[in-house]
Image (cartoon, rainbow, N blue to C red; front, side):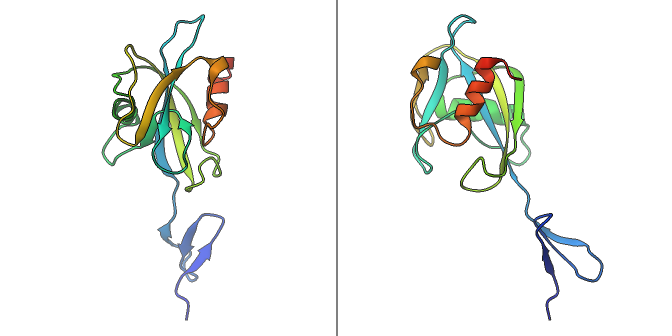
Length: 156
């Protein structure tokens, strides 16, 4: 006798008698940071080369830890992956397409930040480098190319 049935509309298991959601599958919360090292005329955006799959270049970022604000997570991840202490300027946009990350459903709160200095890879970033928009690498992972294009075009 099946006690719980799966309700694919909500990504959770529910009791067939009362409909109470017993176990939920929720998206994971992440942050990404657009670190702009340039002035308004000539942007220079920091990307990190990932050590772990999916491999390629990405905006610095990662998972929000329990008890941490998204702002704290953004500053921590930026520092861990680039060695840069960032000044968060604003929250840019939230990206939530369930297919944006091949590892699972991730919702990312993206921030715009500035920093000074030279980025260097750390934590799970093999390398960190600043790129001008016309010099972006081909192998940008996740939806980060779209995020960068949205930022540069002033979409949000």
